[in-house]
Image (tube, rainbow, N blue to C red):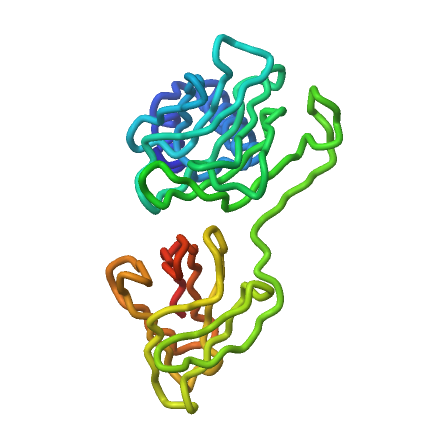
Length: 261
């Protein structure tokens, strides 16, 4: 349910001036809590308990609150099931007194283990299918406040693609460099248009952003068994066009998002 529809339903339920004020105050509090938790736009939350290191998410939920098994003081989370391929999920802990540690491993491909020890700690994951989830970013507003959390310092680690580096297509291929995750792609021999069939030089879990070098030289990213796009080629003919890709290993990529301007 969107915030607009929530507002409309609350207002329609309100009776008299006092009821309307209470309804608005309630929705303002709900909105503020969502902003503070970083969950605005993720939809309704589902609370799930770890079972032998695994959490199963019901269909169509992308806002996950996790509790430890048996209300233990701490628990490890090794796997999250039920997230559709290409979908994103935000994960938080239910209780700051019960810490949840997401473990970097076979199913959770993280930038190292991540412990949720405050209700506003969160991590966003994107599914590559078969219950394998890759970290997109993490946020720890409680970092530095001790085990109980509640501190005012903030540590947020979004993906930073770094300085742009120009690469030229050669026979449909761009050979990148793991030192650069922000690729500006030029056509072979400065042709007016060129197809990009694959990008080599990266490893499993690497994430890159690509964009064209010139709006006068069109780069067409081709959907294929190597470049697993959303079933449609992507034509970049503006320098503000961009696409984010996730490496699945073996020079195979999965599209995370695209932006055409």
